[in-house]
Amino acid sequence: MKRNKKYWDKIILGIIIFIAICLYQVYISYNNLTLNNYIINTKKLNDNIKIVIISDLHENVFGDNNEKLINKVKEQSPDIILVAGDMVNDNSKDSNVVINLMKELTKDAKVFYSLGNSEEDYIKANTSNLIKELEEVDVTVLNNEYKDIKIDETVIRIGGMYGYAFGENTETKEFLPDFQNTSNYKIIMAHRPDSFIFGDASKKWDIDLVVSGHTHGGQVVLPFLGGLYVGDQGWFPQYTKGLYDLNKMKMIITSGLGANKEKLPRFNNVPEVVNLNINTE
Image (tube, rainbow, N blue to C red; front, side, top):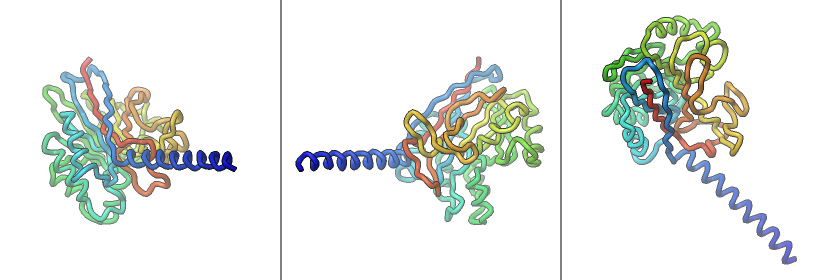
């Protein structure tokens, strides 16, 4: 009898420990922040450039008024900040969390923002005029648009798009030929990485760097196996987060800062800020 009791005590203790570990992994996947650093070398620049990339906030908040996130970004002293979409939710009551964050970030660096599926749905719902609100706090919104900007003695082209870069998407097919028509270094923010992963997009378009989010790093990250699922890529996707070579272009996918309305919570998946150094060769 005593042996049976000890056996079941161990089983119950093991279950309690397992549940505690799972709850902790969910907690840190919404409340902690990590910084991931990447370096790209190119002959197209005259000066080194520092870029911070964030996406997929989904109205998540890190500390009072997002103080932890703001400090993490500003500590990197970026030349520019790229925001790759899904910062609001499709059902957000307003854009206050995002606008207050952008207001702080634009004090120290130029911020460029492209739309994700959540922004698209939020705008269609007529909740508020999100693009106007962003522009009022000095954010440059790029939706099938680009800007040529000068950093020190280097000019780079930054664009933003949401649609697919392959197939018969007329909107992006009209935009991308114009966007790629420069000898300067070209960065495009495309919220969904599958826009350039699938089809012949990575071979067809002359783009140096694609910056994406959307994947949430696979949402659930399993030890030794990686991200569990990404909508367009399916189970155990190949492209979840990190720096990838896609034919003649490079792609950075950030796992983002939050999640919304997913069937499973983020798990073992700490929100990230990406610090990218593009250096001259």
